[in-house]
Length: 327
Image (cartoon, rainbow, N blue to C red; front, side, top):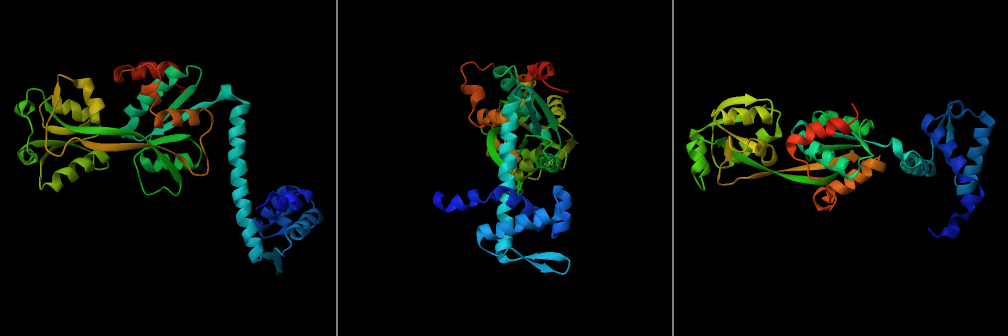
């Protein structure tokens, strides 16, 4: 729209009129809108009349004690909703600029991503020691709820079907390998046919775990029906059971590195598998301040590329974060 076309809107004080109209359209009543806005009813009616004159169209019709929007009114109501969302996003950004020292990055993560989240946060804190962070771990459905309700700024999750509510940016691709105890005969073999695993006991994560689903799907694709030795509630428990010689299991490469020497990766056909983690935020709430900085650096690989970045080993994550994180 040419800017010259917009001049009449500015001349007539469009913004107050729109705010009044939005309340009236939402409440379907001049009286209820006036109460909400703490204005006199005649003032609300006057603003509505001026808005109709400004746009040159009738926006509503009286229907009993209520109001019914015309087509022009419905179009304007939708535009008001977009305008309110835009102003909320702007205010969030400006609020971060008003008090940058109080900025806190509130990150959440799915249970399977807690180690990755800890590493990302540790590197972030090393690069920005004046910023504060917090980490919350929960199941995916709860994470999405927390994002939408603004309890968290960002969440580290896998892809899903709720993209209408959240935006996602790829943060990390994780390699998942099969492991056995270092003393296991297969640990010395090269290029192991996947069918060999049919005769080996497998250690699985709990039924809700994505890593369990990936392993079973990969085995089923080759017609392998393994013998389940145990179902365990964490990757740490799976790694301990592997080291004890109870069977083979699928683990993230980075987490298995902490047990180098006790467990060994298998060179199996079709492996390693890949699991992608995304940083998500609510569609209606763009990251600002520390959250925007963390998102930009995480998806850009800043933790590895920055010359001043401090490399933090997985074993030191907990101690390092303890000194930096808000409880």
